[in-house]
Length: 270
Image (cartoon, rainbow, N blue to C red; front, side, top):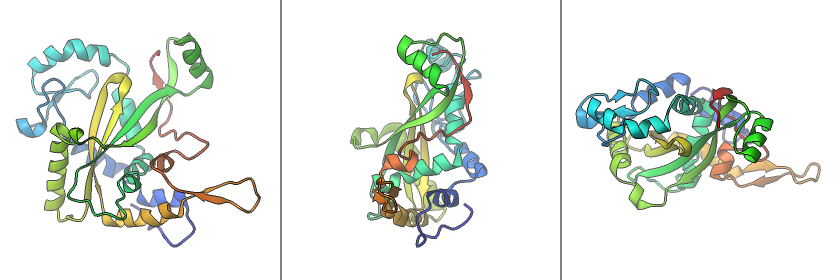
């Protein structure tokens, strides 16, 4: 993190998130620590005591053994093919500003500025998709249900941030990921940090990725005054803007524009 954010100064969203954003090196380092689970049986790296092997084609689906991969292949081949969806999702999540905005959504979603919740498991769902970068291609798909082109240009995009309210989802693999990250955080001496799980889901490819995150008290404190100040909104009266309360949606998608988080990439026919 670079320049400290001055919470007493007039609210500057760009300055805030630039100051809090992870560096690309930090994101890469964090991603290496994410726990993988067998796509067929659910065994984790921790269960086997070693890293799971990944599908050589998509580099995302993980397996505990050759047998599990073979048995899962009839399902796996229908989902991945050569679409490159995992790479697109990784590209999306590697954008430091977007990643920090999504991380920041936990603060208002779970009222972390007013409640200490370092001993609770907090989970959100982030829905991502790949959409055409050209409006004409988008219209073709919408009206004709497919594009006349074999390949079109697409871009990964965040569509929703949904805080979890279902206790049943706070178990199994997600709980294991959270407990491991909580233990690592405590052993490093950061007992006051809040550990959360961001579950990134791409519904069309049936892909999900659980990412553990640590929110430090300093991170939450830096965000709180800016979120409380709200977003400046035009009223139609010159010189008389109003402020709109921040919501989790406004943190990652400003009114009037979509937040495109990555360079345009080739996407398959829809």
